[in-house]
Length: 402
Image (cartoon, rainbow, N blue to C red; front, top):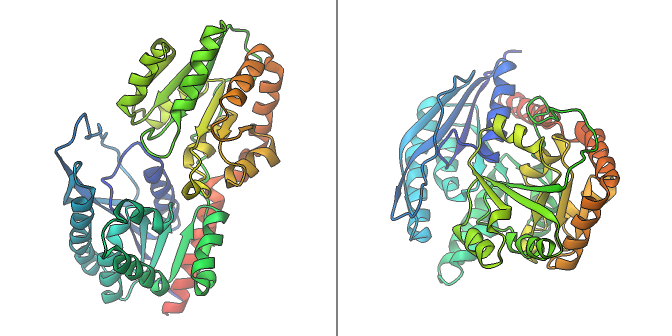
C-alpha cells in the first residue's frame, strides 16, 4: 500500500543556529529523509529591533538532505515581548500559507515559541494535514510574563483548545506528560514521550578516559545563561574556593547575560570565568573533552521541574559528569542520582557546591568513576531511538489517512 510521505517541520526561530532546538529538528529531519520521506523545514527570517548587543549569529552554509526554507520575515522587538508575540501570531499566518501551498501530509510544529500555533494549526487543517506539536517547554510558561493582561486567560484557553484538536503531542520529559494530562486528561491518548536525547555520533568523548594530574579544575556550562539558570551560585562558590587557594575556572559557551561578568568582577573572580562565545557543535565537543565537570544550576522555580535540557544529554554523551543544583522533586535530579552520572546539590545550597568541587578537585578517582558511569549510560540517551519512536507515530497517522 503506497503512502504519500511529505512531512514539514515548522519552528518560529530562524534556522540554522547553534542551539539544542535546531539540533533536534535537524536530526529528526535527516532521519526521516533517509527513510524516503520528502522532508521540508520551514522557519522565519528574523529582524531584530531595539536590541542591545549582537543578536545575529554567524550562520554557515551547509547542505542538508532535506529542504530548508527561511522565509522573510519575523520582527523581534527586544524591548517589547508582548508586541513580539503579536507579530509572531501574524507571522504564523504567513508561514501557514506556505503549509497550504506545499500540502504536506504531516506538519510538526516545534515549540516554543508557541505563538506560531494558531496560524500553523488553521492552515494545516485547511490542507488536510495531520498536525503534531513537538513541545520542549510547557505551554503555560509562555503566559507567565503576560499575566497582568486581563485578556490573557482567553488566549490561554484558546491555545489549550487547539491542543485538544491536535493529532499528537510530543513532550521531552515524564513530568510534562504528568502535568499536561492532569490538566487535560483526554490528551493522555495522544501524548508521546520523545526525550531530547543526543546524537551519539557527534557528542562523544574524543580522548581516552584517564585521571588527569593537574592543579586546575574546569567547570563547564553551555546554552543560554540568561533564562532559568542560576549562574550566580556558581560564581559565589568560585569566590570562596579562590580564597581557599583552589584554582577553579568556569567556562561558558553560548549566549551570556552581561550581568554574569559584572557579578564575577564584583566577586573578584572575573579571571576565573572564561566566556567562549557561541560555538559550533564540533567546537563544543572539543571544549567538553577538556572539562572536568558540567553544571546545570536551577533556581527554586517549579516551572522547571520537568526540565531535561539537551545540554544535559550532550554533557553525558561526551563523558562529562554533571553537577545539578535543583530542588529534589526535579526530574533531572532523579535521573542523576539513579544512574550515578553526576552529583546533586539542593537549590541555593552554596556550601554543597563548594564541598562537592573541593572533593572532586582533591581526589580525581570519584570523578573518574562518574565519567565511567556517563559512558555506560550513553546508549540510553541515543537520539536515534527517539527518532524511531517518532517514525512509528508518523506511520500510524499516515495509515489512517489512506
